[in-house]
Image (cartoon, rainbow, N blue to C red; front, side, top):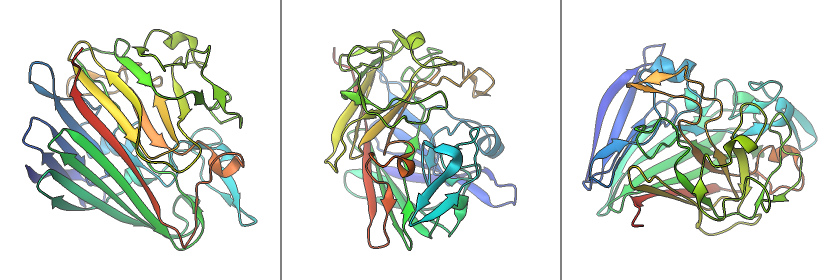
Length: 350
């Protein structure tokens, strides 16, 4: 197992953006940028033993700053959407900067994915890892309080990528962090993920309006195209879901209480034999089928057409600061925010 580092590029002000590589010595390696904590590459062996990158990525710092649809990024302070880019806390209205119509999406116009993180390599007998940290100052993106964040990526000798999040704040503030990796388990040998087989272990989901803002309901998946309790091809009912563009962009309800690490989804690719299991301590997971990709992005010989990749973003429910029936996302000064998500890679034995 080893960790190495190289220069990826430079920020507009000249500061270097570095790329760290974690190699577990068993065919899997993960590359992480200091910019946005971006998972730049996730190289995983297929059934032939060939290791290839299964995550969507871009070629330059400028691409990530100006064109990226959150490829591989750490998302904060608040992932998913906040309606009308505003919320009330402690009797005060906080107006954020909208970047998705009138709403806030994935933290705002200049959010965690646009900023540099400090990185410290860590290693033990069964894993290699990177500890990322940064301080989000008072009023960054319009949020109250100074937030100290730490995120640890850890790659094990069993081809498991752990992501552990930790934060503390000096004022009450909403927080909802996630990883926004886009996966194509064929390593983009197949242009879309429609033939990949998904199973989501959830009985309920959160209905949304035409702006993808929750209605406040929690609904059963029974009898809907969102029911993946039995494994099915992603593309089977894709055109039955959502407004234009068609596809999945829904938060599945795993629990409404604090919980232990639980398997929430499994995806397998018949072409490559790769399998991905996602487990998390979070109450929800957003399944997104790359609906807004449209072929305008190209990198490393790949064209990212609609449904070229999928996301499984472990998180709290969208718009929680404005939804009193949802689990709270308010971090108090005397509390610690922490969550863990695991991406477990293997080969499908079936």
